[in-house]
Length: 473
Image (cartoon, rainbow, N blue to C red; front, side, top):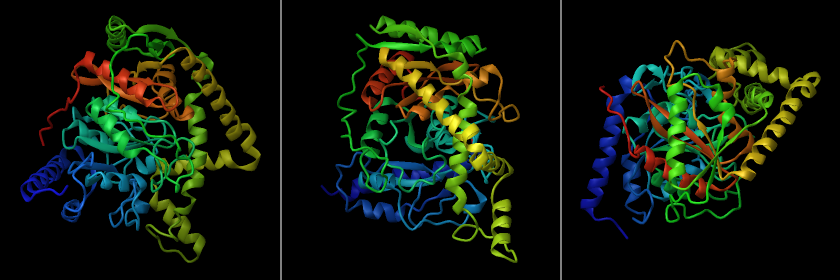
C-alpha cells in the first residue's frame, strides 16, 4: 500500500522535528557525531510498503555501524574521514521496515570504555545531570532515547555497553543472544564478545526491534539459523510458575542501601504476581575474575581486529618517510592514550611466550564462569540483579577498570552475558536522589521471549514505561 501525500507530509514533519530536537540538544548532551540528511530517505520511503514495522520512524545509530555514503568514525580520530561504501546488515533491515536514520551517535572510542568520556568529539553528558557520565560505550545512543529525541536507537554491547548506559539513563537496553543479530558491517571490538543491541523506553518496542533486527545473514557466519520469534504478539507478563534467581554476589557487594532495597521491593512485587524468588550464588573467587578475564580477552581480540587501522588502507594518514613511519605516526596521533594502552595490553597477551599464561588462561576461566552461570539458569527462568551499584557517576569520579570489591563484582557482572552470549536486558527500576537506577535480567540462550515477558511484568510494577527526561538546552 502506498502512502497518500498527506500522510507522507506527517511522517516528514515527525522526522524533521526529531532531527531538529537532536540539533537543539547537541550543545547540552554532545551525543551526535553526524547528522544525517533525511530527504533522500523520505523520498525512498514512498516506494516502500506502509506495512513496515518501523515505517517513518526516526532512528539513531551508534557510530560504529556502517552507513553507505555517511561518515562512520567509531568516535576515533583515525576514522574521522571514513565513509563506508556499504550498509551494515541491520541498516538494510531497518530501511526495509521503513525506518529513517537521522543521526550517528557518539561512543567510547572504538567501543573501548564504559564512560563515553574518551570519544574523539568529547564526553557525552547524562540528561539527568550533565556533570555525570552517560555510561558507555553506547552512551550517545542511550541519552538521545532518554531525552525523548528518538523512540529507539541502536548500540553495541561487548561488555555491558548497552545495558549499563540504559541503567544510568533510566531506559531499556537489550542485548540478545550471541548470533541473534548479524554483525556484518559493524566496526568490531572483540569478536567473541560483540553483540548488536538497542535502546527503547518500553518492552513492546523492544519486542518489535528484535523482530526487525534478528535473522540469519550469510555474510556473518556467527549469525544464527534459528527462526525469529513473534515477540510482540506473544508478549505475556504472567509470572505464575516462573523462577527468578537473585544473584547474591552482586547484591551483597553493593554499598548503597537504597539500590539494594529497590531490588528487594521489586522481588516482593514479582512474588505477589506468582513468581518464585530464589537466591543464587556464583563462586566468589570466580566472580572477582570477571574484569581481568574480560580485559585480557577483549583487548587481545581488539588488537587483532584493529590492526588494519594503520593510516595506509583507509582512515586518517600522518606523513612519514617510510611505510613504517606512516603507520607509527598515524596510529600514535589517530588513537587516544586510553585506546593505545588497551592495544599494548592486548599485544602483550598475544606474545607467543605469554599466550598460555594470559590469553588462553583467560579463555579457560571464561569457560568456568559460563559453566557456573549455565548451572544457575538450569534452575531458574532468569537471573536478576541490580544493573549497577551506583547512579551514574560524576565525570571526575567515573573510571573504567576499578578494582575495589564493589566494582569488581557489582559493576562488571553483566559481562557474564557477553562471556556466555545469553540474552540480557536492563530495565529502569526507580530513582535515587532523582537519578535513575536499573535492574538486569538474563535468560537462557534464545529465550528472548521469556526475557521480554518477565521484563514486561517488571515494567508493569515499576510504572516506568515510556519515561523520559526533559533537557533544558
